[in-house]
Length: 194
Image (cartoon, rainbow, N blue to C red; front, side):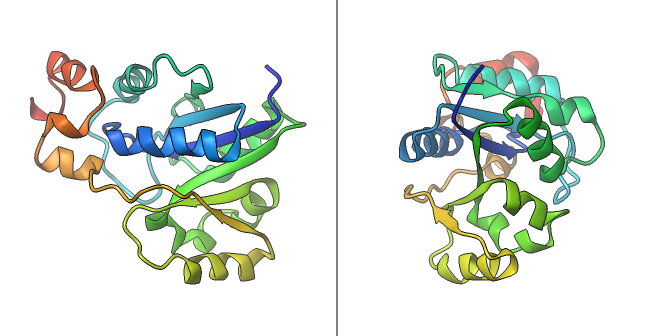
């Protein structure tokens, strides 16, 4: 598939919720992406939680994003196994799309520690970094820190902050924070103690 502008949106998606969908749609629209990879990690370098299989998280993502032809659910991090590092995923997508412009979306909750990510400079040399607002009020110091680290530009997604999170759902399962069909899948599979 030929795509000029490709987005990368990774995370645990444990489970995928409405905030993920809003941000993904905004990312596609605002940057004019031709294709957006949604990539669930195998094991996050930032979390040890792994109570739902990668296969179930892939299925929930397929349900949540069904009907959007610009979104591809990527299983490369699950196939690689072990800890999931963004630098490896960027390298893999570059090989798949050597002539495309890549955009990496991260939440403001991850931006603060971005310069300590594995091979952070390699990531910034190969993607345009875009930060989505989750709950941080002042993103400029975070962006300036990253810019100074790698002499690169950092863009912001002009999304509305959202309250829902996967961790809050796991603590208090509330179907209203989930996309249509995902809650039914969770109940059917008996995930998250339901």
